[in-house]
Length: 256
Ligand SMILES: C[S@@+](CC[C@H](N)C(=O)[O-])C[C@H]1O[C@@H](n2cnc3c(N)ncnc32)[C@H](O)[C@@H]1O
Picture 1: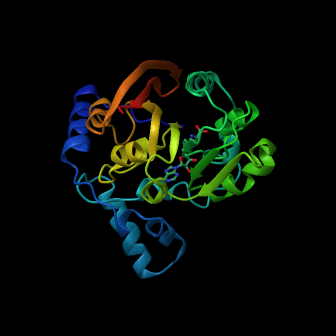
Picture 2: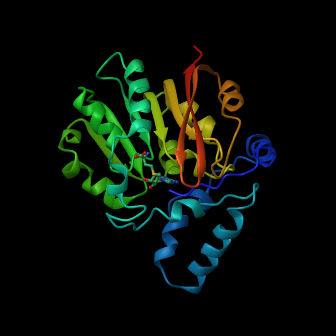
């Protein structure tokens, strides 16, 4: 997947804006309906899409524009779920770190932006039976149980936006929340993402983040402000034809 590599100074500036100067808003503008309008060919929907396209580059007004590209996706192709099934080196890096945190197979675990559930499948095979995945890609969610039969009875696969799902989840509902791969980095900074993750996680949040993706943030500072301490920060670098990609694994633990 093509990744835009920004200059470090520009990234630093973007981090400051996204973490400290974006008003945190949750409302009709970042709910699921905001992206579904793309299916209705009316003047109003064209106007709405235009709105999201504009605000997606603006730090102070909500936008769901980046999620729009994951709705109504076919099974194959660049964004199709067959592209997200391989357990490569990076996936393995995340899995090994998750496995160290799981000390009870009944632990409630949430995969944010799970797609078809390649990580959940590994955890289900390990014996974990209290799994949940959320993703906006309807076909990936629908097909997940037939692609990975071990998910049946062990995982609840939900088609929803990250924003909607986290806003409706209960406090401390999951002991472990994790994500990887252009998921939460694409959540517009006006959504109170870290606050919601910190509220919904009772114990750990584990994120494998591309530090040059769309909405970069000061993850450590934001989690600390929400009473989570940093347990592990581990860089993961790999070569990509578009440049050297640097990703970072952060594991945060709730301070009790
Ligand atoms: C690059 S894929 C990574 C999928 C998965 N984490 C993996 O590594 O196999 C990004 C995923 O995030 C989902 N996604 C992006 N924005 C979302 C949003 N606002 N709400 C729910 N899912 C979203 C997409 O549908 C897609 O499945």
